Length: 326
Image (cartoon, rainbow, N blue to C red; front, side, top):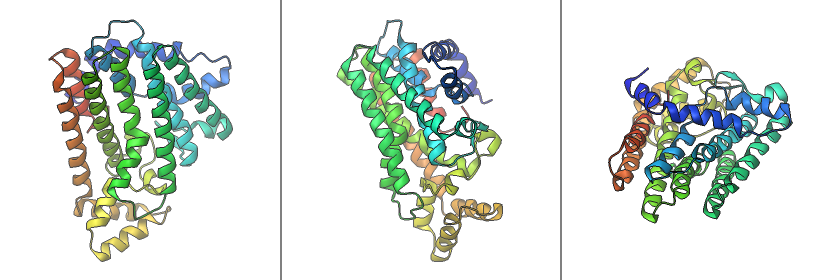
């Protein structure tokens, strides 16, 4: 375990424990099957990145209430709902090292449990009695759905541009992280300046988070990642390392890359060839650099806040976003 990860976990230990309790206490299902199917992913090793961001964003804005942990579960429930749905759409087999929920309970149950978690999130949002929070959660939910649809429409497309890629990940990933940070400011009654700062922080953190996640398809292993390596590629997802490499490769290597991408049954040897080309043409390095730039922009957005342990923890979370073993 890296020193930075250890420091984050120790500093946030009390918050993380309280978030875990709130996730269990606020599930509020009356059907045991719903609890089991939701809990299959919800309590299988998620790192609570999004709810922790909401709690810290509220705290840095001076929140003094007692419902921050309850409100924070909105973002883990929303995230879990998308995972349940995505695993069906992507025909995935593993999630966090376990069989996907639909392989156990069937696609119909997985879809409906995901729907329940979306509805539960909106119910909890309503408990804030703040129309701005309810509206923010509604916007996030719309964004995530449209981002996934946009990605699905571009499945297998080799002509996806970096701009289009960024719009997809803005909606499907960055929007939820941005929403967590902004909601923290909203429930704290923060000034418009602080709300904007945390919105910018969350957006850039979300971009960096997804770019780092996309790298794992080529730089991690199944045991560490918790899902099959090369899964994004087999699902026809064009991510930034591939987009940059295709753009810069010579004609011969472009053709090699295209053949591998277009064959979902590519061999281990072909996958290794692709990884070598990603290194040769700087796809990995470029993606790391772009993610690092977003981390810098996220940290710059926090300059409006005075020094504090909370700010330090947010800065550490931003730094650690580039290493997705957290």
